[in-house]
Amino acid sequence: MDEQESQFLDELEAFLRRSEIGFLFSLHPNTTVTPGFTPPEPWLSWWGWAGEPTPNAEPKWRLLWRYYAQDTPVDEGDFVHIPALLREYLRHARGLQLNRSQGAEATIPKRERRDGYTPTTKVFPRNVNLHGMSPKKTHEVQYMSKYAANVLSDLAAHGTIVRHAVDVGAGQAYLSRALRDDCNISVLAVDWSSVQEEGAARREQDAKRAQGKRKKVEGENGQASSVSLDDTTTRLAYKKIVITADSLVTVTKEWTTKQSQRDFAHTSTEDSASNTPVILVALHACGSLTLDVLRAFVRQLRAAQEGEISWRPAAGLVVGCCYNLLRQEGKLNPLILLTTGNLIVSFAESHLQLAAQMPLQWGRTDAALDDASLAVRKIAWRALLSGILSQNLEEQPFLSGRTRELRRLGRLSDSAYRGWEGFLTIAQEKLGVEMAGVARDGVMESRLEVFHLLRCVLGPVVESFILLDRKLWLQEQLASLGMCWQVRLVNLFDQSSGSARNVGIVVVPRSSR
Image 1 (cartoon, rainbow, N blue to C red):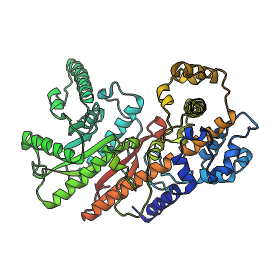
Image 2: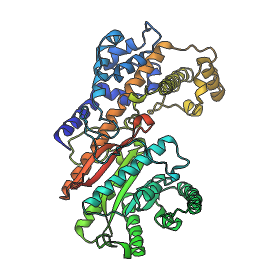
Image 3: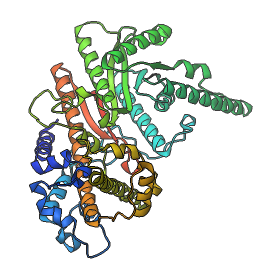
Image 4: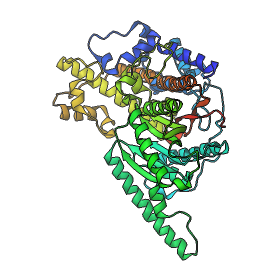
């Protein structure tokens, strides 16, 4: 990590530790509607404004969002009515997030640094094995497979031929099959779920049938196929395990040993049973799975210094997600992996939940903005309902902001939020609590919407901290081993395609591109 990124990490830490920011994390919308709630002192400059009537029909939260979404916020027009503290907060939050443009490194704002492995085209030939995937998943699999192919090509140019990949958290192995076919390598698809393994097997059978039909057509046309069905089958293996750093090292050892014994006659001396280079990949490794992959990578490099090993990491390409699913040891202060002890940010569940928010993408289409508006309304109305219940039933919300009654309410369809009266009717039927004629509190609803918006803009700040934290930890670990490796954060996917978690952690030898 260079000096500018290190300084940026310090700025993120300082911002997240501000007292007024802490209240946005520690308080839940449902808490603000309980009888006797008093807004924290730092909120007093905007709490009253948030509940005031607007001169036009635009909700206050939409005004704040428009201000935040500007590339360079300008304090004019409607924006001059926004309290100065909120304008400063929104500008600051907007400036404290990594660059997320596809094809560029995810680095400090206003630094545009294109990554050398990024595919140069946005359109790739359709792969038959992508059948059944959503457009979002197709986009991700195609780009990640092509990116991995570029990494492997560069490694080969520098003398390391990689014929093996381990796809961690492979799910139904869409990426595994793309890597096998596009990169011409053997792949071990590792997942914890037997359901996913069964799904992957079905997808593989579908692919084999499609390939068989294609071979038949090619044969009728006098064309020869270069890849046999048996070859594709032997080059993709599935393994269901409880994934940890240790189990990942072990299962990779077992697999590479079998692979080397099977095709030893076709391997180089370097790619032998005692030193097989492997690329570790993971597409949206949920929660602590990302950390398991990174730790396995470092652990095996350390083992390589201590004696003979069966396999060695040649490169890593990991895209994380679902920060809220981090295991407890992954949530400890200062979050995940830092060894320096310089940063002191205690991440609670709310930090990790909010890290998924990407408010700059809310307005990418009219439909996306409608979805965002509905999400804000759901938060506000359910909080208003919590307030009604707490008054009628003398029930206080739990620390998470959820009450027993709201847990009974469960998830409602989008249509339940079309109108206030209809929403109350559905809630009354599900909860068995009389709520007919309860007025809609427009003042509190507006405050709740503003509160939610202020929480959401913290999401990219938190995620930026998490990503830089992981980059710094990896750099420190590799440096402690005396090894020359590059660690980069790269925007593999286009967030506007729906790929919210678009940053890949790329680990390659420093001699590479």
